Length: 148
Image (tube, rainbow, N blue to C red):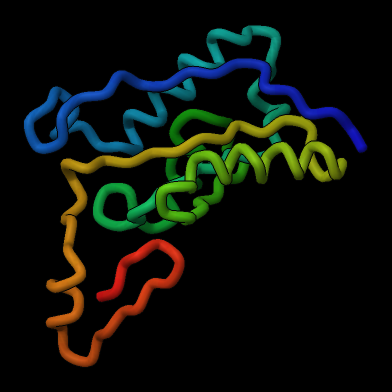
């Protein structure tokens, strides 16, 4: 099995949801800023050598919805670099790193950029009671203590 290494890491600053400095800043734009900074921190890396951008997102809707991984890739990487979004709720960001490592170790890829985005200001949050009151919708989530 091939070795995989984390060559560089960077994250944005954080702020309070609904009140903080990023409340009107789109999460995809923030991710683009982070990735551009990351690429500058490793000047020996030609962005054309990136095989994939893997973006984790717990609530892929509104400004961070659709195929946000591809939209981010189009803004900060060469057009031929694909982008994908992974949704594993709270484990989305760490799952992108594990997926990238697995793809490198298996020989499928040589260079992956992976991480997560989330905006708690721009995404409407709902509760179990709000969900279960919708017509015909009932949730039962196992393993984490939630029962809607």
